[in-house]
Length: 108
Image (cartoon, rainbow, N blue to C red):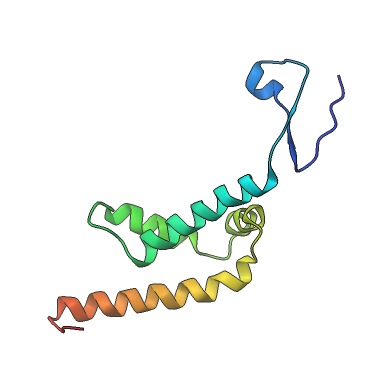
């Protein structure tokens, strides 16, 4: 069986155990999902909540490195990874400065 594949379709036999059909995926829905992944990682990396563990924060910060994995996810989200990296780095630096000031008792 030959199935035409494109970025906007998914081969449903992965899900259905070999059924001979495929479903259209909404590209915008997929982009929104990957944007949420990036946004959640950004929030944990720059504004961790009390429920975020140190490991989760470090993983989120590690995510924002210029790797093939990062650029693939940015591509799936429809954004330019090279554009977002310096923005995120500035925010992580600012978060670090604020945390150091808070530890020293400096009120902002």
